[in-house]
Image (cartoon, rainbow, N blue to C red; front, side):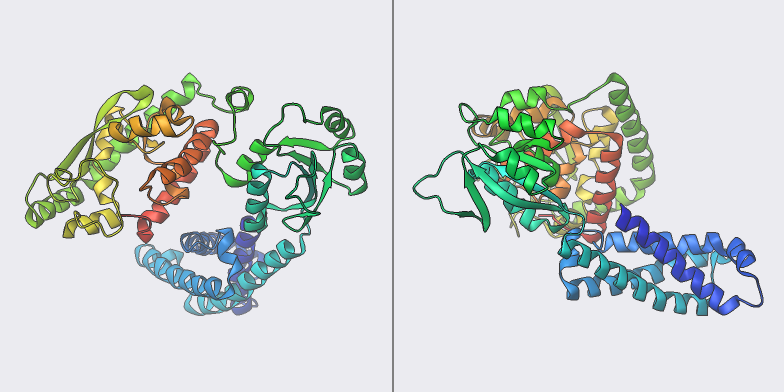
Length: 452
């Protein structure tokens, strides 16, 4: 948040400085900013929206200088086009040609400098939290892997504590020193200046160092269970590791009557507005589907909704009619031969999903929630994936946390991975989270990503 807000200030300053450079003398600085602040704010907002849509607020993008530079140029181009459209519709918002050109030069200078500063801060670990991990099993490895991949997480693991040395154990665990036995846990934490202890034991019964952990807690050192820590840094639940008691006693899963009514009301109003405004576009694609291949325009299918109740889901047909007559129920694949010519276009643009607005209007679905699944796959996955039934405690959604965080699922392994995100959403669902999902979905749709 500091990074994004700071960049917004820098963008505003770039345009303000360009305005002062060209106009100072004719107009005082205070009068100039009073006259131009709205125009400058428009440029700043459009620029940051362009940066967002070009993935320049995704942490991984900043790791590659060439990719970052390419996306930065694309963002400036997108900003220029968007501002040209705004100025055409609202000429009074124009800041002036030369101000704009000088602003671009300053923008590039400020944005590149700000991002290099951010990368330097992350690389040097200026704001990292020093931690110790208790455990050397799969959960500890999962956590260390995520910390290594997500440089922005900001955790510096100083040492691993394990219960006992095994035959295949060494002196280091993924290059981090490992210490056997828990007797010195609290003393080492104090000596290392550790601020948190992450308990990532695969098996806790009989080996949990309660006394040492209590001492750490009483000395002001935070103690976090590994499953909660994993959830915090990844945005998903590690369903293979968590037990029912963790779900029972953890925070979240709040579903008040007010939040349910609010979500339903917003869904009803938005779906009604979108169905009304998008009707002409939907009619055009309905005609295109009919002309392109034989079969109905709409595709309907039974899906499993809230509390396991079945409902009929509607989409624009993107495959040949009766596509599963020979194969039976199967997941869609890359370059699926069953997809029609028009189907490729509407799936790429997500236009095939628009009839689901009717499902939202009726109350079968929400805008945001787990993907509605078919009964055939639900019955199969209920037996093979832990906690799969829990995803049906909320209404399915047109889009969702799992959809924006993970690509299209086409196998049981993908279903497990998406469930991790679905349960995280159900546990932490809120209006702010729904808004975040919707904004991210708009970006995915406009850039045509992740379709099959």
